[in-house]
Structure formats: C-alpha cells, structure tokens
Image (cartoon, rainbow, N blue to C red; front, side, top):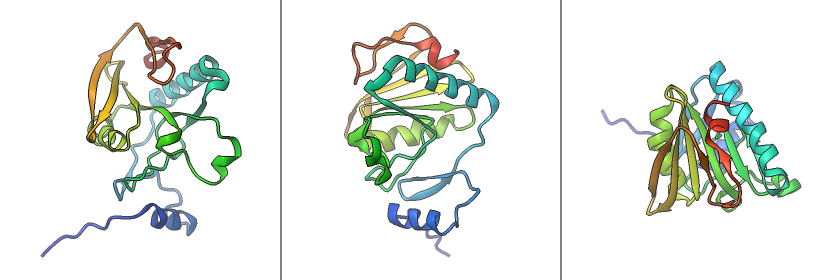
Length: 183
C-alpha cells in the first residue's frame, strides 16, 4: 500500500478557512502541509506579548509589530509567527498578509516546538529570503539568531543569552536580548 500525502496550495488553504473546515483548529500551512500548532503555555504567551510591546515602543512608526498573525510565503506556506516585524502598509493588509518583501524579521517562541522552529521553519523562511529569523528557546532562555539566507539555508546562526543585538533591517536600533528572552 502506498501512502500519499496531499499538498495544499495557499488558495486551497484559504478556501478551507473560508468554509469553516479549520475553525477552532490551531494550524498553519508549511510547504503545502497543514501542521497543527503546539498549545501556547503561560511562559510562551507572557514572553512573546512582553517582547511585542517592547518592540512596538522601540521601533515606533518604523515598523508594524504583528503578534500571532499569518504571513504568506511563495513556497506554499502560511505560518503564523509569534512576532512578525513588517512594513507599515496600512489598509493594503486588507488585501493580503505580509509577504517576504514586507517582512523585516520574524520571531518564534519555542518550548515543545523547538525542533520544528529551528529546523523546518528556518528552512521555510530561508527559502524565501526572509533576512532575519529569531527563535527564543524558552527552556534555556536563549535567543537563536538566523541571518544571511542563501540557497534555502541561513548561512549565519548564533546564540545569545545577554547583550544587545542590532537587527539587519534596523542597524541603528539596539535590541536588548534580555527584553526578548526574559523580560
């Protein structure tokens, strides 16, 4: 017996959402597969919310901070990162979710989803040239930084626990690592 996996397009995924098929399900589309998202525990909710508020204050009008909202990627993916730092396009987002051209960087908070976020999502984001991707390892209170996408992989990866980081999109903005990983 052969097992066949169905790959979904973004349009088909949107049709399922519109038809209510995915109501009350925490899912996202990754490379054509509908993947169940891990439940969000209290530390995850707290740290991502606090970091979102911090980034709103820090970046002001320079960027929009979207919390737990979809982004649309051309590799049949529509993930919902915990934090997406995107261009301010106002009402244009009534017509489409942010796409790679609109995204400055993405942040995921991970506990049980750490492997998925470090391995699968990093490749999904690198494939479409998202310039920067951060994963907060909630167990170790570490910030894993991915930069320089090339050929579907990030060529730079490093881990921080303290200090300051300057995002690629805003090299003049000092982000305190503590405000992202441990508030």
